[in-house]
Length: 341
Image (cartoon, rainbow, N blue to C red; front, side, top):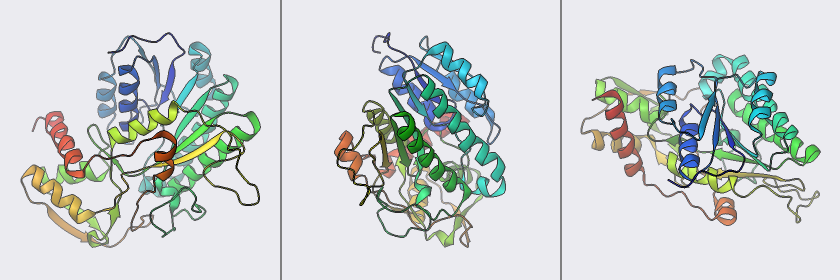
């Protein structure tokens, strides 16, 4: 492990979450001091979140269990630790959850984000990197999804909340010159993943001999992205604070940059995988067939996602590249160990 730095700590919100835990691990491994914040909500089993936090036991890691919508509590942490950078990953995840419980989604995703923006502004952050989502592309059908495409037609409140985050971030970049970078993640999977996502749901069902649900009869495609590739993208962008784009033209405005210190990138594997292929890959790894239940398309879902990552390649020199079979193999190995199968 690298020697611990004496520079200000990095605050990571959503530290008990899937991506947050992995980001904290990587920051600690390279010698950073990390301050984690998470509300440990019961959206899914809090025991999994506690287990993730157990992996982060480290002299350079401190944790605060608070709700980001509690501005006074967040400011107390920021005043105590004086961070220089923030990775904001906390959110109420899930397209379907946002349809069933819109109030909780907006409170977590919008109220919580403006708290972090304002706390960051008051502390003069050098950079705030935050999680957006591929869901912002909504009704757009032009593939691959480019950060220059319109994202004005969301098909779920979760997507709308992430689009709102991008607008809020730009406002703070404009008014307060706060450097902000948004990262549109594409269907992340890997060890310590969420129980409500495809890799976990399908793996659990195959081991248990239960049917898996394939919406739109399995005729859906996703840009599945391995978590280590996501984390590499997060760290590379964190290390390159957003700056104003001197070529930005108000008469022909780019969507992914600005005259303000603002950037938006896609992070995806740049390959769409059919859900049937995804299931077949899991069947080979586990060595057991899945029982399939074919269902119609669900409200809020989109048919296909695929990321144009040319801007990420150009600006930070990174291309996600983990093959699906490798990533799923690592997930299944972790799943077996975690559940003692």
